[in-house]
Length: 303
Length: 259
Image (cartoon, rainbow over all chains, first blue to last red):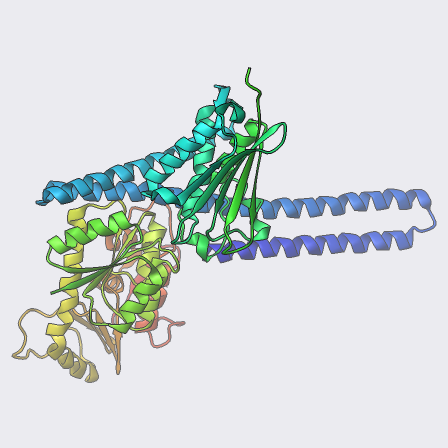
């Protein structure tokens, strides 16, 4: 109900803006017809009208954009509420169960594992939100040093595998840098790890039931190291490839709707990579054909 | 054995609920998405005695599931669960046709108590069927409040109210209006009961929200207006020109049983 309400208000402003622009153009033409003999007046009038038209167009655009942003913000609050409350509800449910019922040893251990997994999920959400908040502000302390990307990637693969209880074969890592010195990057290892984990997290989350993720590290050229994370999941439509990196943005559609998320992950990835003077982009063969995320980071020679 | 359907896509919560409800003696089925749940509830209408329904589901959401079930005439009791607990969300749930509502995180004991209550309540109409026939006959002769004939089958005091040729049975959640029998949701019944108890008096929207829905609201909300519109459709001969359930401008509503 709320969404269609917003849709209506957007439509209203677009129609309203277009009408005003049309009116201004009509007045402008009238002005030209009436003053075609007096050059000075004509030039002055036309400039004036053009300014008004430009203003109207700008105003309408900003309004529509602001409404859209509001909408995304709403969706974000919704999903964060869900992501925060669900694990708490689950932990609480299990604690109350353990408190009020006789649970045998095997079940009890199972419950402990579930609660641990839920508290991890909670922590992950909180960290994402805090990180996104930090990246939004200018103030950031730098902890930069030479970092071995190969090592970080291996750690991230391990972490993601345990988080999702995945088998050994799901991640295919192809490290072409061989010796660790080849993949040296100057940066903050904590942040780089967060960015890479987010990419791998997404690859697993947006895979279909059959999960497979290819990870490769190679020297792109003299200056850059390329890290690629490829999945064979639901894919990304062509017009969404850039937008998905925006804050709070989540691609519309049924398939994405089945996966829970806050719309912060890729925003965090992009912000971190930018801070390291790198670049990140997505490619996809379209819906159902998987997607590839490539991260380019400037390489440093070992000193 | 009493069967309960849990519609919840978060596997941890679903399994926790399953464990507890099984410990309470229920037979539990767990479904992870709205479409499958809808299909299950519409193919075998008698199988489940109650549904625990999450709102945020993949595919169609819980509100939509409840709306469609009620639209198809499936009146299985629904206990709705959701992460968002704002008054608007709660009202949305009731409007969709939920019978009760809990926001996450919930207390286990309360969830179990409410579920037990819903199931107990839904069983009344079955025991009630003979008495219902009585009410229909009374209704035809356009009875007045309190003039129901006492028959031998009566085992407990019937909770009914007769007004303007209509009879509402608070036990079976049914409204008899002329030759129509309308099934009401628990909340519609509660709202009607509240209005009837204050017949002739002006009741504010705020007091309705606080006392019928147990919601604390700071601002004046018009969210219950939809419920009033629905009740009018049930009890008024011409819902556009209400005679029984009147709007008091700027304040709320007034129920007049015999205009």
